[in-house]
Length: 248
Image (cartoon, rainbow, N blue to C red; front, top):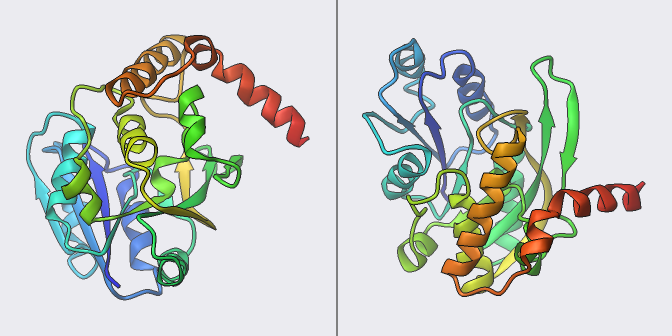
């Protein structure tokens, strides 16, 4: 089974080498590693060129943003399943791909859902993000599994479409809604910690960002003809707190 991993980057010299090395350290051989660079002006390309034995394909050209670059990478992919590793994140251990492949060989599904951990610049783990209790119905109230923890069967993108470029922040939410809720793809929870993610990013900080994400979540649900509660989506931070306290 071939696994395609896609990293999208732009001026990522400070972090991308760790990302590449986490692919280099994998103990599974049939990995197609694709990097889509947005025409970086720093040392990113020089770092990429250091790892021809790890990187199967790479391009560097202007794009229309993060999701356009992801689409480019998926269209370049030839693997059975596709996963994303962002340019400031890493695979959680050398066993991630081999364990995921073993799981997928035993579960003929459209997607596997794993867990991630979030850490700060010092490497301290701040949050464990588990998909154990997630279900597609939770998309209706603003909850999705960690996007990088999902490995999709590649053929789904040809059948169901790619990331929608009219979203600034939540194209991943729209795609997951379209795949899991509208088209009801088969999926299974792997309980594998797949990624270590650096805290931060366009969709993870600030009240204005929170409002923008809420707007785009509702837009995604509406696009896919899914009924939803505006109140529950706008109040999803409260539901997260209640869920955290309940687990405690």
